[in-house]
Length: 277
Ligand SMILES: Cc1cc2nc3c(=O)[nH]c(=O)nc-3n(C[C@H](O)[C@H](O)[C@H](O)COP(=O)(O)OP(=O)(O)OC[C@H]3O[C@@H](n4cnc5c(N)ncnc54)[C@H](O)[C@@H]3O)c2cc1C
Image (cartoon, rainbow, N blue to C red):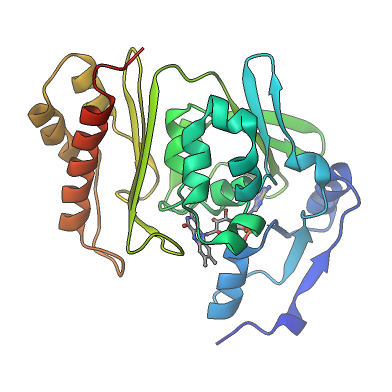
């Protein structure tokens, strides 16, 4: 049954520091950014929380900047702002590409990068991109900021290392060397959650990450190692089975996901061949 909205409380911080103090002193509170995931839970009546911290007005968390060689993207950057950002298109075009394939225009206007990362769905479309970019998740509490490598952020199905008194304030992305590639396979082009999503970079050593084929987004370490050592595609596809554990669920079957992952891997390699830097 739909959660009764009248039971819910929304706290309105005036600044990031105010938000962090509320999180520490008035918790437990659930951060609320664009609310595109949280409203789904309201509609399905699966929302455990009743008290929310509204981040939407925290303008400094929307910024996309270059700091030295590092691309910094604030947690509240929406998909629309990622698509429009010249910096993102120049430095990490597969992030803009992934953003273009999220939901429809309404979701792109409200949904945020920080929300996608914090929501921790294995089907989150930006997560394979952040995995191959070797992004760093910046977490802040009242008295401390810490940087967690993306590969260490997820600890299990919908589990992260974020503590209840911390917010994701942004993502830091170092320069990415090599040709970038992204594909999402879903039921249809818009408003469909991925059956399989892949991001990859063909540089001096290949980086490949898949979503929707394991409890968390994963890097294909066996496949990367094999391709980096000069193995052929047959061997790489064989290694795929050691990297992924797809499941049957309402969106797809494990066999289908395995076949699609193999096909995407082959397309990535064929379409980026001869152009690696
Ligand atoms: C119709 C529809 C289509 C969709 N299509 C796609 C799709 O194609 N691909 C895809 O990947 N997703 C899709 N989504 C899911 C959703 O839009 C994204 O995950 C979006 O990025 C979530 O961001 P948000 O700001 O709306 O998060 P919210 O709903 O506000 O929050 C999501 C979770 O993250 C937490 N959170 C948010 N921001 C922070 C922060 N800064 N620090 C700590 N915790 C935080 C919240 O507490 C909550 O647990 C779709 C959703 C809908 C409703």
